[in-house]
Amino acid sequence: MPRTQTEYNRIRQAASENIRTAAMDVFIEKGYHNAAMDHIAQRAGVSKGLIYNYHKGKEELLADMIKKRIEEINQVMQMLPLSIRRPNS
Image 1 (tube, rainbow, N blue to C red):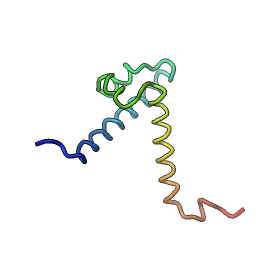
Image 2: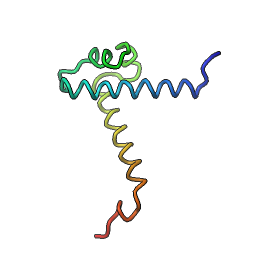
Image 3: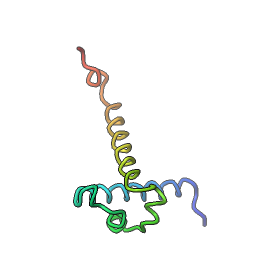
Image 4: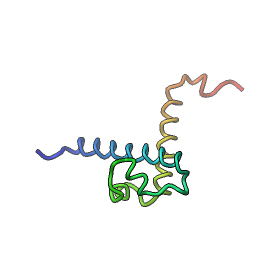
């Protein structure tokens, strides 16, 4: 039975998160400049080609990681009461 669009999106999100997590681990371990896409692919258990399916290169991968983290912070901030988000001056 073919996958539904929802299943495809879920698999794609999971793979992307796996790659970002592996990249974070490799960047911490080796440093950004010493980290190679081969290292990230090996840590994530995927092919280097799959990473390039999601990102043009290491720079774009890092930018995506930062973007996702900012989105997570914004979500948390939105859950805070307005009085905490904008304290009186």
